[in-house]
Length: 243
Length: 118
Image (spheres, chains in turn orange, yellow):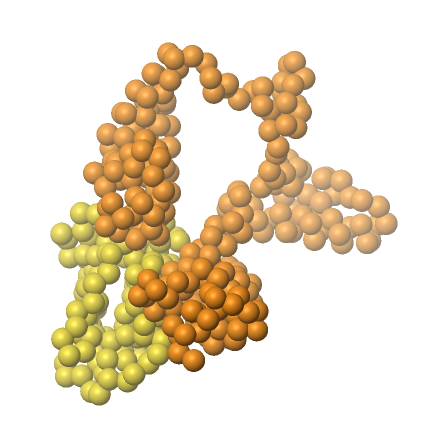
């Protein structure tokens, strides 16, 4: 059976055996694409699994009547899933290498000391073993931890949670106007295409795909540009607040 | 558009690491983040593979600092030998389309160059 026949038959029958046959036929694409993204901190096996699952989803969604070859359709689909996987499995908080190394060192030293003495070591003993200050051990042991907004805030005088320390979003029209002013001035430093992305995405509420279509670029480019622009805006806002 | 750098290189496995490192350095100069820079490296090596399959033994890679970001022009050099029909070429082309902001393929009887914009 040729490609069109395979997919047309599958669309009509939803025969699982046929779907598996299609997946097996195109599994080389998942393998090939997974290999292209090796070396970015995720194991090949994980990438291959993500790519294979994307392939299965793609087989379900592919419509041969659109006139596009399956390989052309599935490559961006798999690539997108792999990139989402990278995004979702990156650390929430990126720590400097020295901090990461010391964090591992603390864990190792704590295990060794516990084995040697038969009791859990304190920060002073770990610090002495590693040749660093006690304060450093305490602060680095906490580094990278993620705290829920619902957890109690230790510095809150009223004994509330972190939510209460964060300014309420709905504080009246004046605040909204102020925010708009600040945002307008932060956007002044953006290039025209960067402004367009923000306008389409956040003022018109368009999807990344629709934004990409309007700008005549790929969806992935919009995704990258959006991330970059938001970072830039954050920096501009910080500068604006500091001034 | 500012011409950042031009490389002329033989197309072979040995040189790919050097090209990737150079591309990474230029992406860094252009202010791109790590993720985009990795995508850009994939695009450059895929383009070179496409030119290798088109029969070229050498290629020129030119990096430009464009108005909207980095522009990379990759062209086959000299006379091309017989093209090798590689089934993965269409996947490489689709991958370039997915990763780059814009990509165009220059084709006469065969592929002669790739232009990537990031």
